[in-house]
Image (spheres, rainbow, N blue to C red):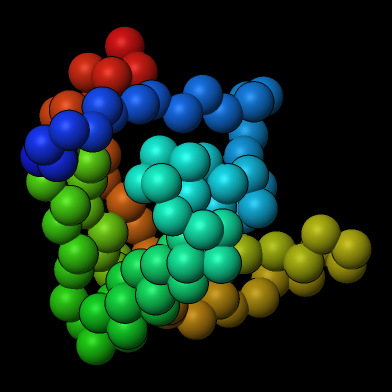
Length: 108
């Protein structure tokens, strides 16, 4: 991320081990020096764009962060846990995420 002249780039520390949407919006707003409303719209637009791309069968690569993609899960047989009866589970498309090298390095 290129820094703007005259501005210092700050790192926002998030609380706890998991972050909810409102905490993420607050962190984006602080880091980008924008309103929480604008940060919320930006986050919603990002998530919607990723969903749309995956729905169309594409993938989304954020260099340094990772890649969102769709994988196909084959049909399989399973068991109903209440009755023990065998059931057939249909094939499905499932969203997946493959972290990039920079993200892996940041957490190790």
